[in-house]
Image (cartoon, rainbow, N blue to C red; front, side, top):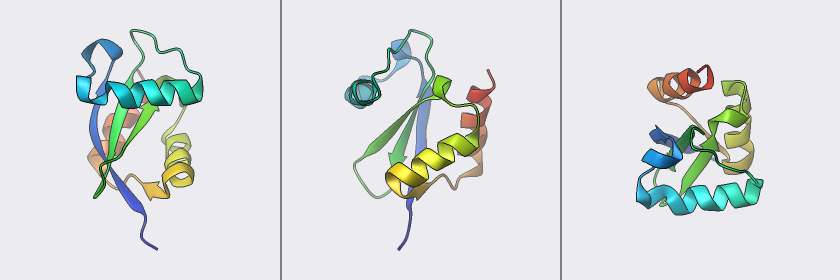
Length: 94
């Protein structure tokens, strides 16, 4: 079976998050019981060939390995794009 491929929409903070993605962030924060602060980096991933998105609160991860594991387990997916991986990883090390 083919894995879902995720594409990076962008990395935002709550104050610069486009309105179209607010409901996804609210949903994920409710599920995770996460208090989202003004400086929380949020990666929005589009699941290719679907109308779904996956939200990552980047302050919860230490490495790309942790993110890869979450995407594999929750989406049966992967991040294939090298630039996407570099962008996300850069925000982990801020």
